[in-house]
Length: 323
Image: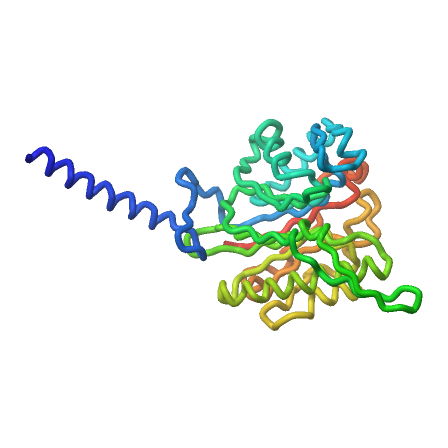
C-alpha cells in the first residue's frame, strides 16, 4: 500500500513537471501550440531573412499531375545546387523564402542531403496542384499556423478592345501564403510570401491587383486577431516601383496595414548579371518598422555577376531585424 501511494505521488509530480515544461515551451499567439520538444534557439541578436527567386528550380522527379516539359524532364543541375549553397553559406540567414521552387519537399531534401550544415529544420509552402513554380520556406525558427490562399478566387477586372471585362482566377493564388515565425515565447512575426502574376498586359496588371487587394484585406483581418502584429511581406512581385500595383501594396488598406518599401527606386534586382529593374521586394508594417535599423534591406550579390546569373535571373534580398 505504501509503495502504491509513493507511485501515485511520484506520478502526480511527474504530471505537474510535464505540464510546467509544456507551459515553458508554449508558442506565442496560438493557445495549445508549443515549441518542438528538442528546439534550441540559434538566434543571436538579430533575425535575418533571405528572399530569392531561384528560376525554375525543379527536382528530379516527374509529377504526373503537372504537365510541363521542364518539370516532366526533372533535370537537377548539380552545379546550381552547389552554387546556391555557396550563396546561402555567405548569407547565413535564419529563414529562407524561395520563389519558383518545385516544392517544400524538394527544399527539405536539399537541406538534408546537400546543405545539412546550414541548419534548416522547418519547412513549408502551399504547393499548386498542377504547376511547378511554388513559393517555399526553410527555417531555423519554428513555424506556426500557415494561411494558404490557393482555393481563393480573386477578381480580374480590365479593359480590352474598349470593353471592360470581369474575370476571376484561383490558379496562381497558391503562390500567396502567410506563416507565423515563432521567435520566442512572447514574440512572433507574420511572414507573408508572394510570387505575383508575371506579364505586362492589362489583364496581368489586373490579376496582380486582385491578388494584392485580397491579401491586404486578409492581413487586415488577421491584424484584429493578433492585435497589431508585426507583418513582413516579401517576394517577387513582378512589378516595378511606382506602378499601380506597387502603390496598392504601399497605400491601400487600413492604416495598420500601410506597408513600407525601404529601398529607393534606383536599386535593381533583375536581371542578375546586369540589373536594370526591381521586381523583388521586402515590405513591412509600422509595427515592425519600430524594431528596424536605417537600412534593413539590401540586395545580396556575394558572387560575380556571371556566377549569380547562372543560378537565377533574380538577385536575392536580405532583410535584418534586431532582437
